[in-house]
Length: 189
Length: 189
Image 1: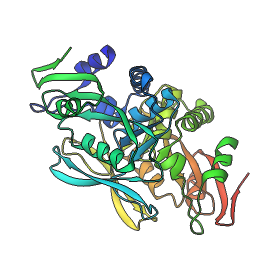
Image 2 (image 1 turned 90 degrees about the horizontal axis):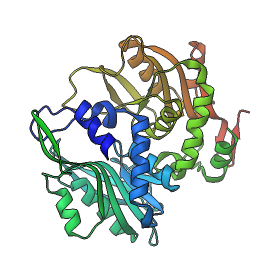
Image 3 (image 1 turned 135 degrees about the vertical axis):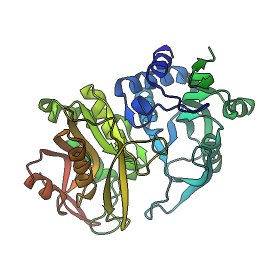
């Protein structure tokens, strides 16, 4: 997605090798027009999938997931990082954050994902794939079918994308980064 | 906003007096088409405001804020509940959650709100107004101008709305609830 790549080159920051900060348009301040274009592009790439629900993780996944859901005409469920006291039946899975070096649980109310549902997962970043594996785990527990996974940015020099594709999952990343240092941001294609 | 009120009556749950659960379309599972209508309505009500940025809080505020930002053609900043290690200069404020009975800090990178900015705050719920007061505090610290505050649902039987309006803030709530029990959900107008 050319407009996204250009924006990463223009406004992305790389304070250390392998680290990409996109706080000014994706992760903290949100460029709502770009996010809609991201939604349109995911909807185009997964048009074939017959997804009936999107699953993401709070907080950074919500904006791209909501735009995609709007474009596809389907609802979004966002996994929460804490279980609300009002949630009775929860699907849970553990995520390891390599950035923060902590483990945390993600939680989804089991009422919202059922056998028969066709789930498209959307998130902002794919790196080591820990959050992605947890989303798959939640879908598996629910008995629903995973139809694909879409990521705004993939760090293809980390192992998450390879692991998911080897499992036969249809993965679409709108910007795949091959090399990331303060001297160079290089895309795969 | 009639379509929202009807949806609250249809799918909102009130497990205890004063408590409203809208997890199935606003807070956990998101009805993306309804959220776009919410964005259109906020954009209409604040069209006069010359807002150039929207401020909200993760996670439940993001979806209505992003749709509103898209409709108004302006970016959204979401306050984070934890300060990322990559954020140098932060505006911070403390929120008291009456639901969870805890205090937590919200954090915004000071690069994204500056004097001269005209800030519209959007959030999902207005009840006691603690989160709203913290958003105002962040805007005040930044030197920017607060041009209005929009809430998807206001519990008008709690004090937040009155406090904000007494301060002269332009508050718009799309559904104002006057009475809330498991027998009755009554709107103000």
